[in-house]
Image (cartoon, rainbow, N blue to C red; front, side, top):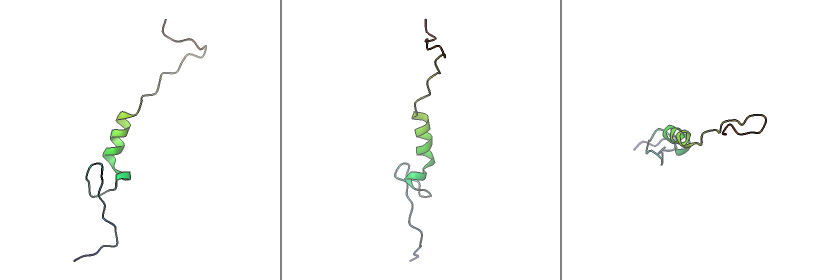
Length: 51
């Protein structure tokens, strides 16, 4: 039996065996999709653009 000095990797998010949960590219992509979109900046005079 082969014994490696490297610990086994298994992503609990997607099941991939080449990376850990913290390094999961799918998890990062999904988090970016769900991130709230930035609000539009308000005019400098403080009035809303809605009339």
